[in-house]
Length: 100
Image (cartoon, rainbow, N blue to C red; front, side, top):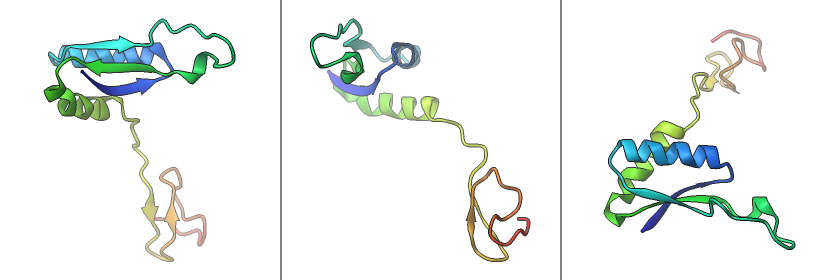
């Protein structure tokens, strides 16, 4: 078995597990029922997703990276006038006030 993903939110890990199972990759969740005790705290131990077959770990990681990665429709851009890097949410350059 090999760990391929971890997160503090059980719903997100469960979603990742479903994605892998849809791609015929057997997996299981560890630390799902972890109860906090003493000084450690509940958030200290992440919930983990493990694949049963080590040979499928690379495929599983690739699937999760592609499906769970945040969408970034507004990629950054370089101003053609002054060369400044701007966040994708800007329509004009923050430095020289020219459009891209």
